[in-house]
Image 1 (cartoon, one colour):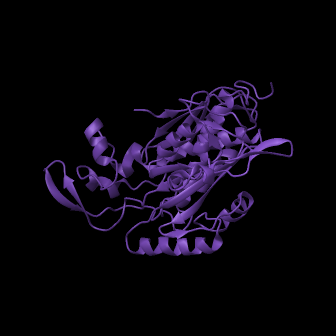
Image 2 (cartoon, one colour):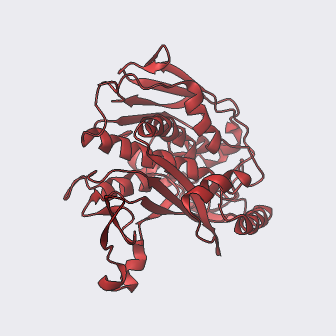
Image 3 (cartoon, helix red, strand yellow):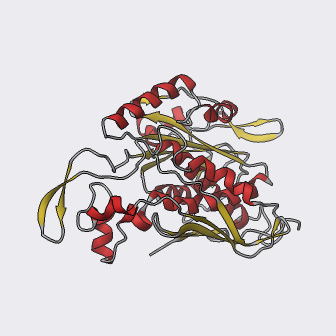
Amino acid sequence: MSNSIGEKFQITSFGTSHGPAVGAVVDGCPANLQLTAEDIQKELDKRKPGTSSVTTPRKEDDEVFILSGIFEGKTDGTPITGVVFNKNQHSKDYSMLKNTPRPSHGDYGWMAKYGNYDYNGGGRGSGRVTIGHVIGGAIAKKLLKTQNIEIISHVTQIGDIKAEAQDFNSIKENIEKNPVRCADLKAAKQMEELILDKKQEGDSVGGIVETIAVNVPAGLGEPVFERLDGDLARILMNIGAVKGVEIGLGFDVANCTGSQINDEYKIENDAITTKTNNSGGIIGGMSNGMPIVSRIAVKPTPSISKCQNTVDLEKMENKKIEIKGRHDPCICPRVTAVAESSTAIILADHMIRSGFIHPTDLEK
C-alpha cells in the first residue's frame, strides 16, 4: 500500500478515521524555515468538520501536535511529524457495514484486495485521512511563501450552479465570507441553498473546485516523465472524492482551434509573459511563469441516507442498505483546503528539485 508522495519534499500519511489518530510525516523540508503549530492549525481549520450547516455534524477540534522536526521555532532538517487525535468517533454507526459494501465507496475493492478491512468510517479509505495532506501542505505553503508563491482554492460550481469568474485578490477576499468557500457571493448563496435542500432530502451533491498558484517561476517540471501537470494531476486524483482533473482550459481545448487558444508570448515590464493563460501556467510539462490553474470534479458524497441496493458478502445475497452516521451533503467546501495543500506539496517538491529552494538550509 502506498502512503507517500513526493521525491525531495515527501509526505507520508498515516492513521484511520476511527483509530486513535491521523497525521503525516514530512521529510525533506529544509532547515531554518520558521514554523509553528499555529501555521499548520490555520490550514487544518479550513477542512475540519462541524463548522457549518453544509458540512458533516461530526465535531472534531482537529488540533495538531508536532512531535518532531522543529527546534526553537524553526525546522531543523529532520522529519516533521504532525498528529491529530480523533476524539468524536461513533463506530457503532458502521457495525452494519461489516459485510455490506456501501455503493460508490471503496469498501468492496478494499475487501477484495486486502481481506482485512476497517469498515468503521471507511478506515484508511476515509476522507478524514486528508488531514495528512493538509499537514504536509501547510508546511509546503509556508516554504513556498519564502519565494512569494501563493496558492488558493475556491468552489466554482455546485450541481448546476456556476460562479462568475473572479480575479485572485477577489477570491482571497471573498471565500471566507460564506460556508461554501465560493468567491461569487451571489452564487454562493444559491449553492448553500442547494446543498441544504439535498441534505434535507437525505441526498448529496457534487461540484468543481479550482486552485490557482501565483508567482511560480518558469522551469518547474520535466518535459517527458515527472511533468509538472502530470504530478499535479496525480496528487489531485489521489483525493478520494475526485473523479476528474483539468489544467488550464482542460477539456474545453477539444472545442477550439490552435489559433484560438495558443498562448502568445510578449514582453511586459522586462519580463516574458503570455497574452492568455489557456495552458494554465504549464506547457510542455514545465511551468511558464503564468498562474498555475487546475480544476477538480468532486463527486457527490456517496454516504447518503436514502435506501440503496447492495449485497451481503457473507450470505451472498442481494440486500438493501440505509447508511447511518454523520456525513457531508457536499464535500467541495472542505476539499478546497485539501486541493490547496496537494498543490503546495507538488510545487514545493519541484522547487527543491529544480534548485529554486536549497534542499538542506534555507539560509544558504
